[in-house]
Image 1 (cartoon, rainbow, N blue to C red):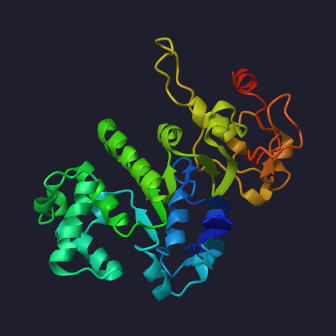
Image 2 (tube, rainbow, N blue to C red; image 1 turned 60 degrees about the horizontal axis):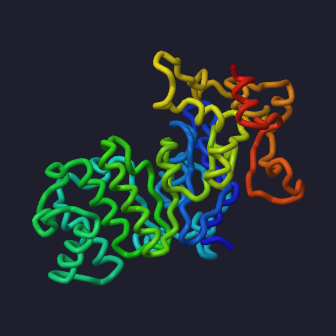
Length: 342
């Protein structure tokens, strides 16, 4: 069994006088100890809601959460709030997307870091402040003792993100969820943050769930990737097979829309047509069908299953490659898909 097993996770928000909105429509994936797993997709596909459901941070009113999320043998979704609070910060931790809104603006950084150390490690006073300074130093914040006395607005965006990481790793959690940790940071700081996360995984054996829409981050960090669309995983594979030969038209479109530095000057970009709102309900077929360049009538015959994909030519057809796709008309090869799309 994996450290975290998510099985058919669903999240629905109550509508005002209308039907409920399903933000997550049955997501399943697993994360092993010391592994980096990516949840990838454009804004609105359900990535952040999935992470908030796992951490128990969604509102209690107007939200319905279903399925199972088993962490080390315990279903997180069925825990009492007090038991979940004991796990959060110690065994489970999360790096939020926007550090300026995630940190308390009227409380110094030092108090926010030492609060975790007091709650979960029993450190107080000078011992807590010394450990907090060591944590800030570990994540690369210069002059950490002075920074403990400063407020979030006195730190740069990169330093605020590092402070959040310091808080998240203060108790050496077994599972770390990073929700777009490099958003709004310049590329130099992004590289430093990603290198820091990689070191934490390597040194502590922490399992990392990386939530991002940046495929460059996925290529440099993740071991396995789950591509989400409209609240469901549409493709799941190891990093290299996914990038080398994406099977779902949505995953193929995401990779094809990345600008290339070696493209001739004047070549147009290849965006996925339409928007996340151009979709149908999964009960009626593939939600991506209205935007798909490979659409057929078979796409409207109910919800497609997430099924195994055959290995490369010449391989044993019965071998399980771990590459799964939710599509009745998957892309067969990258070159064939490119020709068909043109």
